[in-house]
Length: 262
Image (cartoon, rainbow, N blue to C red; front, side, top):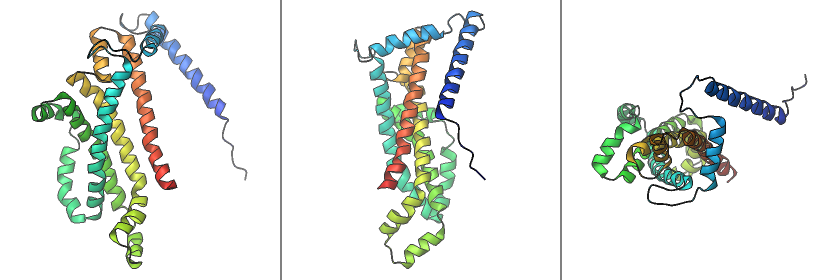
């Protein structure tokens, strides 16, 4: 029985371009026919606005009047700081809870109560405690990124087959060697999945948080453009947010390949 060959890559490329063209055509038709509001963006205006925004992304005319690059950089800085802090907490804690049934059962009620809380619900509390918009944004990101990685790490460590741990104990492996050569490699796929979820959640939340805390950031840019009714610029920002999120996801996914090769 012969194995069915997969279609050439160019088939997918052509199909994607056709779907994109169809979407743009329907978008233009909807605007021209008056199905959308008078301020609805059009493909042509969005393209033109995108060229304007991206042609000079580094300008600075004041604290709030800056190019799109500085807004993206401010958002990325907050997300990465909060994400790293959350990982430093979540991964070791996840290993601890994953290997200790007593602690896992003791902490689980608190985790289940706090996990469903919207990250933005912590924003007023962060402002009250920290009294600083920048630190509050990072605080919200930490809480956004903490839970997916923590829960996935606990699950990944807890689900490791006892046979591997028993074999390591039989061979006289120390706790550090067991962690390095048994627990960590076995739990790595689950940890990376949690990290990807954490980072994507953080990137989602920072946009909403920056609309409220102000200053620089891609969320502030979107809100500022809305106040100006510059909807075309908002569409450009949405596309940039999506592309940046895709790049971040691929960067985290590559961690698993790098660690395995090492």
